[in-house]
Image 1 (cartoon, one colour):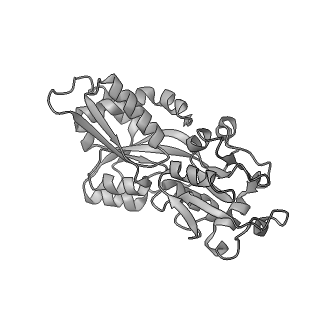
Image 2 (tube, one colour):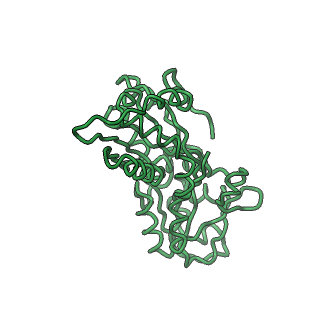
Image 3 (tube, one colour):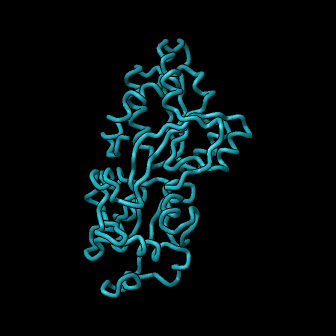
Length: 297
């Protein structure tokens, strides 16, 4: 994945927060319940929600962690307006978003959290699509395909002339932007006759109900719904591979493997609850990430 522009106040989180987290030992002040606000990626939601639930249990409900799902772009918009403490993201922050945060004085730390793999899926009733090349994906999803590539037969003459129903994360999704970038070549590009949803769980249900469906979801949503979905092996000029742990780790599941992130506001770290949540996350991320079917860094 290409390196994106950076600015001076976007420092790596790990060394900085190791020092910051050391301060997070004091108990929460008595009185009103403390709140930690997280919003952003549907892909990262299972990790953030599991982390929030464990943290709240460990703190005996002294802290309430709100985890929202407005998509990566939506989360960054709220983050740069100072409305939330932490943004969850399925791609790195973009230059425009960095500039938006700079305008409002939001300084932040980037926290790489896990590896994910976008999983191309069809309905289990589909017996003929078992693999697709990246060129096939481009042929299917690029803007020029609309009105031209409409049936399975348009992709492969051996396949039936049944009309394909496309499903994908919405425009505010980092998953959609990443898929556009690595498959089509432009982050915000693709055909418009696609059923979209920011919530990958919604996409799972729609694909499971449509025998001619084709879509893509985050790895966890496939792993948790293997009875409802059929994964498609992906390859380009070599053997196609499925998004297994081994294939993601050895780099053969390309180009749909990617890291996911949390971004925490520097100002939010002044709150004891936020510091404690980040410290808890750093200590337990590898285990929690694995439990919710993502790959620890």
